[in-house]
Image (cartoon, rainbow, N blue to C red; front, side):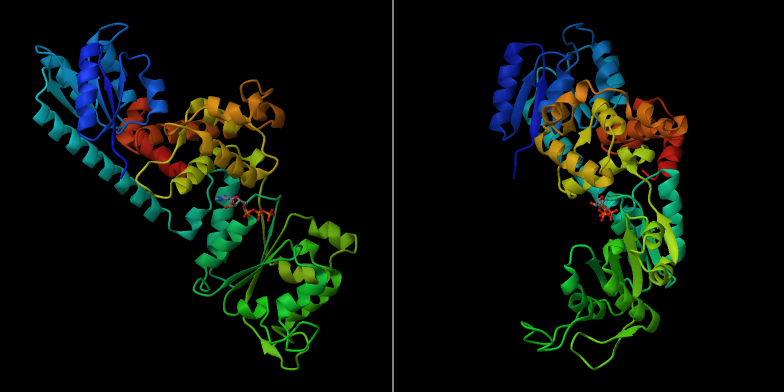
Amino acid sequence: MTPARILLVDDEPAFRTLGAQWLEAEGYEVRTGADLNGLRSQLQQFDADLILLDLSLPPHFDPRHTLAALPQFTDRPVIILTGHGERELALEALRQGAWDLLAKPMDPDLLAVVIRRAITKHQLVRELNSLKTRIGRQSPLQALIGASPSMEGIRALVQRIAPTDVRVLVTGPSGTGKEVISRAIHDLSQRAGGPFISVHCGAIPAELLESELFGHTRGAFTGADKDRDGLLKLADGGTLFLDEIGEMPLAMQVKLLRVLQEGSFYPVGGRRLETIDVRVISATNADLPDKVAQGEFREDLFYRIKGVTITTAPLDDRPEDIPLLVGHFLERQAGGGSRPPLHPDSDAFNWFIRRRWPGNVRELKSTLDSVAAIARGGVITLDDIALLYPDARTEGPSRAQATGDSLEAQVRALEIALISEALARHDNNRTHAAQALGLSRQGLLKKIERYGL
Ligand SMILES: Nc1ncnc2c1ncn2[C@@H]1O[C@H](COP(=O)(O)OP(=O)(O)OP(=O)(O)O)[C@@H](O)[C@H]1O
């Protein structure tokens, strides 16, 4: 097990040295600090599980100054070290969210117990929060992240059509979540217990597509040394997801049309008619009516697969989804472990929101993966981003200016980013996050509900 980390902040060098030696002997990993100003950046380098904090610190040596800064650090237990005669200040520290206070000179036995209790409770709270989040996210609809009107409309439609057997066509640019949407429809349908079989129509060579879909009998062609079921058969009782259907060769389109009309097919080389029961969901980033007009896609097949059409929007058109997606991916990266997810500071959040994402959510996710890999101390900063994207600090006009996002979308994006950041910083403690944002707890809860945070 990795040792818990403690940051000891005190202006007296001798106290720091002795304190650190004692804490290390108790099995903790320790760093020390001498002033209040460096504390925040020190925490970015060293994600402490607990802070031991003296109240009179440079540069002001004014306990009130330290107290005013305290709420910034109480996303982990802070134990205040007080001198005698500071009773009022100590009480105020507790009101500001300090975990406990101990008078100098320290009683080592008492200190050991207080530290151990604080760290254990803090770890339990983190685990509880991460479990709550995971349980709360279990509805298939909650796999569809986003608070933009576009995503809200999609979620409402998915909920309506999922229990029916209607065919669905999901269209929209690459990387905007067409497969995630299709999967959510399946997971919410009565077929959820059955298979979800995904076929990438453009990736399978035309000459193989037929046997991949319909299966084949032994000896049907060179190399067919035994009977093999196709993907249609494997999808029986479940959902067949035809991805990039616009890339399906014309000859195959005719055969697929027959299956959709009759619900049955012959495996390649076979004489026995196979009957299947599948729901078909198709996806494409192509303009199918245009392909129909060009003679590249069969009109009759288009109308067969069209059913209800869901259209996804480019990520650049819905900036308010960015902070939520960032939070979601970081949480998934953390995997519910004992360490909390990384979180971007406000400059980093702004960079993610302002940037353009031609590769949509897929590009956002892979950028986040690389940035998260080099971040230290639990926080993603603009400095981390600038290591991979040297233009990060100087990037030209904001995405909003370039794309003309509505003021409403920009305000929503900013509000979601600030709330997500405050919640992350305060370990999902809504009371503390509300205080930090200058909102009432009730007001914050309303916003959390509205944005599905
Ligand atoms: N709204 C969303 N909520 C959660 N994850 C999303 C969302 N949109 C996209 N993703 C994630 O983005 C990545 C790309 O999504 P997906 O494969 O569904 O896109 P697509 O539109 O089907 O892309 P393509 O057209 O290239 O096949 C996946 O990792 C997916 O989990």
